[in-house]
Image 1: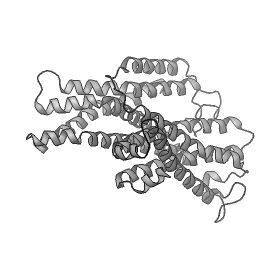
Image 2: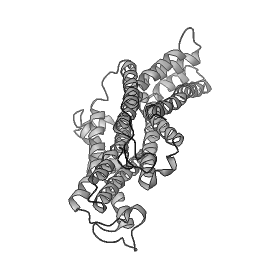
Image 3: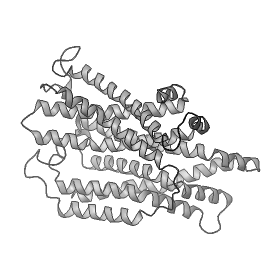
Image 4: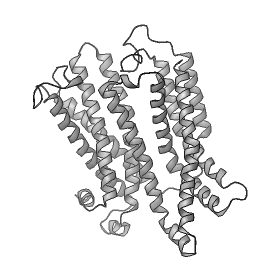
Length: 375
């Protein structure tokens, strides 16, 4: 009940973040229901249905990251004294974050179910207005228990991730040290894709549930792609930290010092969302280079949209949270005579430095993905 009351009294920015999370959860829920519908329509091809369900883990992971960003942004603006007076200390704040995230996730799951019923019909009959639409017209009856279980996956995952994130939010964060591990994973992914990337012997036997030319992608290439993506996400905080240190290197001006120190302090929280967005953009670029971006189909396009929106939403949410946390320091700088133009220029310099590092990195990652695929 408290989570619902806080949701009703939230600011517009908080409600917008919750609606974005609900939309991402709805997309994941619809993808899971679509995979279940495909498995029911082709009961003899269990491998394809299992692959479709397995690949739903990618947009699910990006949605969980968005849930973490939203959960960390919301408690920062809440009146902590009022929450403590209500009996919500450090041990119960994760529960409140999980409940608030679960509410948004359940709204998204209900929306996904309603759209699915409109397009396909109920679990055994045609939709409300006639024939099933597009890829949902394969027929077959869906088990109610399986559908409800799949719809609960995204809200449960998002709630668990947000609870864990809020629980460890107050811990001190040292300088990021994931660059060697990320580099090693990128090298391992490239080696796996290159050495174990023999195409499947026949179409449709690859590890991507997509049309040609991606239907013969072998396990080695898929595993290499995943390792490269995880490596970039692990290395991104350290790259952001080094970018901030480079801005403040030597004898910097006040503008460079303010921008560099701020970016170095924010590198751990901002780096991983930026790294995830870099991987998502690189994957789209690689698909375009392979000539397969237009062959994704309905569910492939929906999954790509969920990944891109969730990744971009995570970056925007974390950026807004960090700007709110800097408000007191910025107000103090303004009181001692720092021009507001300088503060805005420092923020623009931080953004330009990140873009100068991660925009070329996305192109490099796309080239690595193509190299791992033998293209």
